[in-house]
Image 1: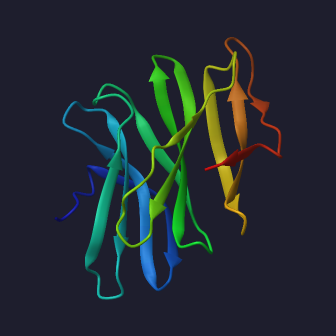
Image 2 (image 1 turned 30 degrees about the vertical axis):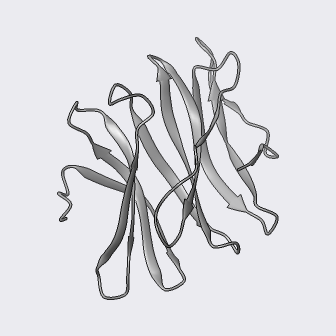
Length: 152
């Protein structure tokens, strides 16, 4: 299925096992954005497409970064609107071959209305390390601990 450049905004691209993996945002039928990821082989053929929407098209979700791991999975970190003016981190683990994913891990920092990831790395023990920032109401952004840790 061709992707309209107006409907899809890529935010992260990696090459993993010879294939191109892309994530970003795709506008859904309600006008909100979903996390949208796809895998393209060396011939330019789309092998799979996957989207994530937290709450039945009523929220905004966006992919920030993809990382491949030695266990054959692809990890994605993104932002996901939990309620109006309250954003969480969403971490998704994709099967590299099929594009299926496990239930995403959502992380909310108590007292913060916006939690934004800026970078992520994976290690050989299936640990995902995320750094970014959190913003509390009426306060400037505060850095997340650089040792923020999720195990997916």
